[in-house]
Length: 138
Image (cartoon, rainbow, N blue to C red; front, side, top):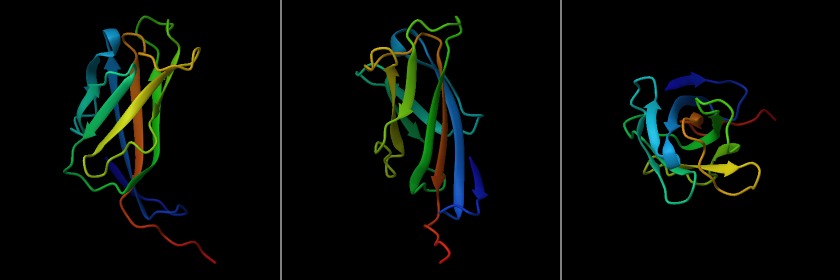
């Protein structure tokens, strides 16, 4: 986690958190990478295709809201994906109390929920606020 004072934005103090995970066969979660920060407690595959619930550690500054949650999906180790997909942070899924949120994967050809190819890496950037909203100049 990186805490920064960012001037010119709506919030005085922002956090930036990064992690990634790899999926295996049928969307099973493989290696989680978070830079030994122990930010990620777990990533659990749900029954819906391509849906994952991420649990973050709770002993960190309380994030009031995520102002940006970016998820990118890299190609599998085999090269060209057989199932072209995008992944996104499900809006409204963040629970401040439980420190969980949901990621969903969509097949770009059909528009339906889908598992990414085995070996695909999800890279996640969370930008959040740990301070109250500032005020704009009149």
